[in-house]
Image 1 (cartoon, helix red, strand yellow):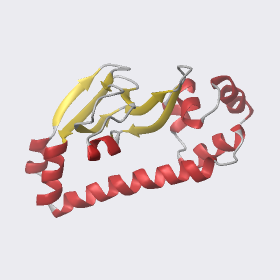
Image 2 (cartoon, one colour):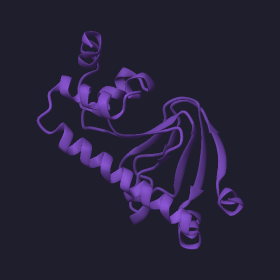
Image 3 (tube, rainbow, N blue to C red):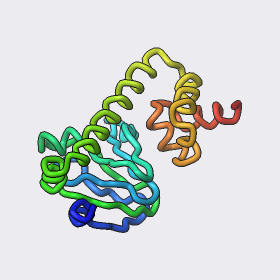
Image 4 (cartoon, rainbow, N blue to C red):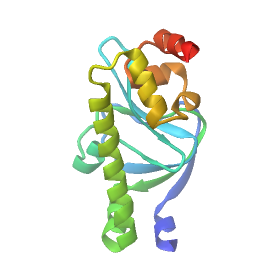
Length: 170
């Protein structure tokens, strides 16, 4: 554990801070110690489209960019004042190579990312707004209480006003 902890750096980040800009290559993993981060992009009209949230106890980054070292074309942002543990790609992979238990951590990150992506892709196909909100309540029960309506709506692919109306009916 001492070796693992020596590779991480604690950072305290203000609310809504962009950790990695749109065209930057990801160089670090971020482990959320307190609060949350999100990965999002902007469409042509300037509307936010959130792809992923990492809450306390989870890793958050644009993993494809970290792996292939190409720009992710996404932003990584804190949603509230957050405390993060950051680790460089090189140090992360060094731990994966040297510590068998850390290999399990990496596998869990990859598996969780894959499962979330699949659930969203297949779960949202053909869903109307109400079904999307019910889906997120089923799989992520605290989600709607943890993030703003605007961010939740951007994750669900619906308008914030629509989300508000649905939440009022539930």
